[in-house]
Image (tube, rainbow, N blue to C red; front, top):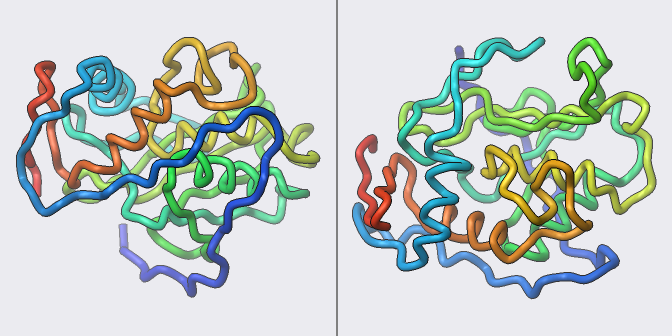
Length: 228
């Protein structure tokens, strides 16, 4: 697939109040240039392995095709996380979801054009794509070092026009930015519990974005870059 340059970064998403109980943001420090290290919180280690590094690959999805990413290596976006919101999404729910995740994790987002790459596309989808689901979110293409390249957030057409805040938009965007599954007890669980992310989910995302691309995490918390 031909790599395109990122379209003009016209809008940087700024944090706004989202309503309900919020967690104080702790901005990830980002990779330090190290190629190995250790994560102290073993509960977070287990979540990163289960809900990111070891997540299933190879499934075929309508429109996007086969999900292609390397298992056994983390997948995350280069910051700021690029998002394209399609015209089929009516209202501010997608923007609110970006604002929400930025406010509680410190991860910045930027709105890009439809032809930008890398990007997360947020769009409406019919029941032919979603079956019985109200939404879906996943990364389906990566670069050689498993850095996220293309992802999609699909929202059932009947829910694509909404008034924020929307737990559905927040939940599906959470999948697209790095929680590839349903850890129990919070916004990312199935069924969804509450309207805000649990501390467990925040720990997952903040630690994920401290790791360099191409890193592999071991169960004892040690990690090293295996695919630079």
